Length: 378
Image (cartoon, rainbow, N blue to C red; front, side):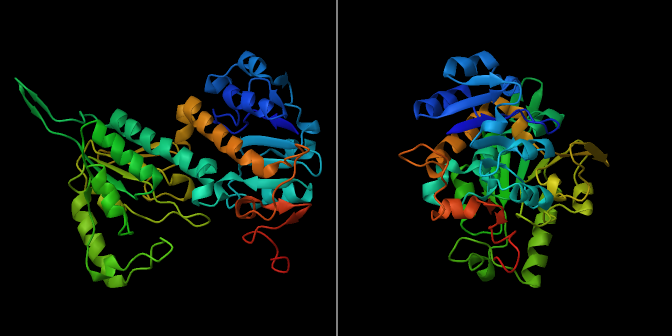
């Protein structure tokens, strides 16, 4: 199989879909790899390292001859036009944000796979790009908050007096939230966190954080057997809002991480709650690309309201290009056996596998994913 690794074209995108380490392993499996010139430079992987790993370097990445094309982000119109019919394309496609790209890939008869749709099952953990990237986003969010915060994180006892530890509140205890808790704790902050799922209480405690929630009988029944949150009553939501409002007013840093695929981000910090924080406090909004968890946040722009700094980041993993690229490339490497015929090494997705079923958007010119397929096809 011929695999093309393309250079990212999105503004500010520094990651790359393959590293010299994964290229060497892919070549060892019997495939050929062509890397577009300069694709890895922003991730500290110059062309020579790819050559040394066994890849070819070309101006267009060998896109026209490739059986499988890989990127980090969605393709451009020109790239879609250059990919041959019947080839595969794998990337973080953000299909809910641009259905037109999904339809264009299908129309070009490209088998398109959305890496963010990899099912979150045990067997697919090594392929889970959402988790690998969210983990680094949570870490980086704390560093960005520390940079904006005008005070120290840990408590310091000096001859001149004591510096109080920063109070950090993490809202949303998923992969990014858990890493944010761990990172803030390592920096010496007093950390608290909240989530609507009761099971996260133990996870927060295991990392040294304090769990914040109205823990009544309704809360204890708020999780389905599949691990998803149930809709809460208006009465519970009012009680929880009152508790969180009082808690936010005492915090120095709030980091919000709540995202729902295909839907606007839920509001976690209202304008009034943000304004209740003391001057110099910081809010980091990781959901700003989908509307934001705080209505005051703006994509990749620092907003200051009543002395409170509010920053929304659309792509924190790109600020850790080498590590995020390494993890993403390994996600793709782990997925490769499900896209390859064992005997011929040709591009041949395992269409009956639940991982491929969950992530593949199109097949042979037809949209097949239930979220995007026409009603008749679905």
